[in-house]
Length: 294
Image 1 (cartoon, rainbow, N blue to C red):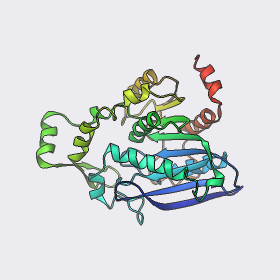
Image 2 (cartoon, one colour; image 1 turned 120 degrees about the vertical axis):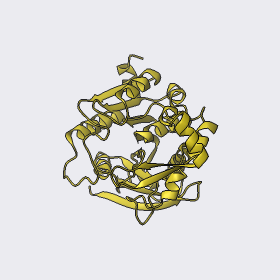
Image 3 (cartoon, helix red, strand yellow; image 1 turned 180 degrees about the vertical axis):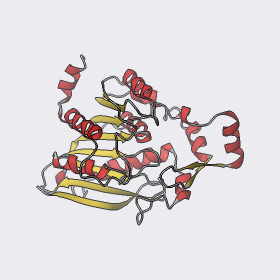
Image 4 (spheres, rainbow, N blue to C red; image 1 turned 90 degrees about the horizontal axis):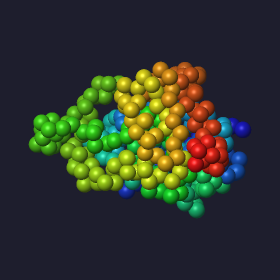
């Protein structure tokens, strides 16, 4: 059956910026397991091969949702460009957690436009990089999520902030700039980002969240990832009560992809990731627990 693609749908979150979402599914009015994907830092829902990933899941009978965090710097009219850099500067982890909750809630509303095409009893959460950390925390809080998959996820948010003189300089000036290597833009981070982390440090502790998980967790990491250390995947494996670790030989942080991705096929590394992710989601939980030796 042909894949239905609903792109750049707008709904309001809690933080005065719209959340832009895509839905990929087969419009046969049959209940389908839900997959929700969270992009990473300096990422967006249309980056690289994420559309092809969405198509693959839809072909396999899933209702696939991907979205732009409300303050990731993109806009409705330009969902792949960082044109709202002020929003980027005002982003923080709790806003992203709120955005993800808004996405989950929206697809589970009784009057959701495509409600006949979803199975609310199966909600699978995927997060890439920083989005992996967000997904872990949300999966520990939101009991309707049934499985968790993280791609090249960070294991700690606090260690990624600067220290001492740089942190003090940031506090005094109120803003720091980072270079987007792809666009060469200077993107701001206002000091509120760090202040928000400090205020919510217990909630934003990925270790604590991972240890509280009550669902199966597939941890995927490339052996040649230079953005997030492969050691992070080992920590997540140690902390998660029901983990499965998938190490991808010679894969980088984005599993061979780049933006834009104009190839007909996804890289073999990411195809391998998708095959294993689909198998993980399609395996019944009791079989997974048996495989984990529980």
